[in-house]
Amino acid sequence: MGFRAALHQAGAAALTQLLQFAVPAADQRSIPCPCGHQAHYRELRSRRLLTALGEVELSRPYYLCPHCHQGQFPADVELDIENMKFSPGVRRMHALVGQDAPFDHGREQMKVLAGLEVTTKSVERTAEAIGEDIAQREREEIEKAIQLDLSVVLGKPIPVLYVEMDGTGVPVVKKETVGRQGKTDGQPAHTREVKLGCVFTQTTYDKEGFPIRDPDSTTYTGAIETAEEFGKRIYLEAYQRGWEHAAKKVVLADGAEWIWNLADLHFSGAIQIVDLYHARQHLWELARKLHPNDAMKQKAWMKKHQRLLDKGKIEKLVLSLRSIASTNPEVIEKLRIEAAYFERNAERMRYPKFRHQHLFVGSGVIEAGCKTVIGSRLKQSGMFWTVRGANAIVALRCCHLNRQFEDYWEDRRAA
Image 1: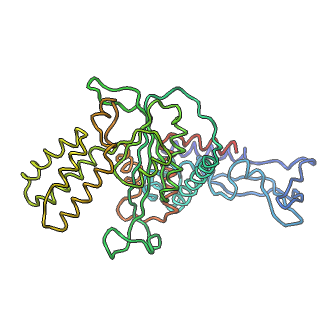
Image 2: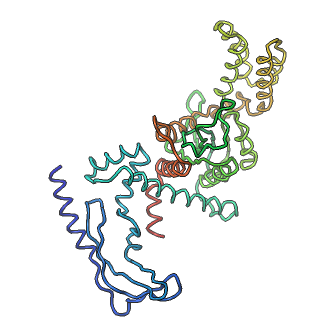
Image 3: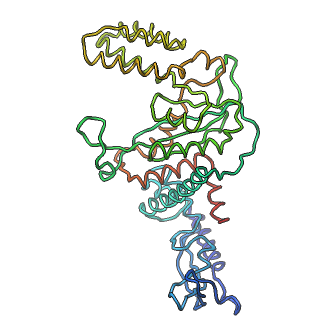
């Protein structure tokens, strides 16, 4: 570690020498000012900058506009450090540790692994700033999608492409839930829902006929936003993944109404599948309601009705539910709601037909995504987010998990 520190010190000294800009030539001492006039070279000015090698000193030309009195440092723009305390390399570290773990843990990681002393607040602010920039670029791409100004996605035909969607609550500060109803009647909300979507492909299946997800094919996108906004987001992700080239297109999710509204709007013609295990859970809830405190009767009831569900005989299942008599108003209402749920999703529950096509019938990928992308980072004990901060970290985290983080920095460099 001592040897590394010495090398960093030597590297920082060398980098300081490289960052000593010369006085501009006579024909380069005037540059355009945003106000429309010319800014003129005044002097060389120095500043300190934290880099991956440690703190260095930068000396660069300063230009001042005599008309609007606005100063400029063109070298700062070129080096991507305008109004920044940290070099791009250090900001990348901030972003990587900030999206992966609590900000204070990220500060410790940077000290131990990179030998850099930063504050917890700088990790938070820098990670969120980069996340916001990524989110802004996503919004610009979504706007292009709305205007049908999308580049043609080239590539090989895709046998099966899946879109999955779900929502999960994240704890937020009090101001973000003002006027929002909580899950319990009369209680305020304590969370906001992050809508998360994923896209992945399938090329083959195993000897038993069960589908195999293509390795490293899953990408994520999400935000705290309305269903309408999220619909445009997940459509863009699917389009960029080659939706138009897919031989089979599948939307797979639980029974949430907002999801199927988006599927009908943005993915018309796709095969729609309700997650089998989620549908079974509906039956289990009903079994417990019908036979409280009697596990044997619950299992017997489930065995009969799950068989109908698994075989895709939804009409018979609905008929059976509606034939159950009860004097308990709560049970009667539960039966009505569940019968309507299965009836509404009947065509999405033809599981034998889907299995015959070697398709997934469980939405485990997006459920795992809710835990991996959202839960493990944004739902830890003691965390409370603003919507702005949560969306920044979600965007940053999706970018990293989608293996697009380096592409983002290349785009910044090219901009």
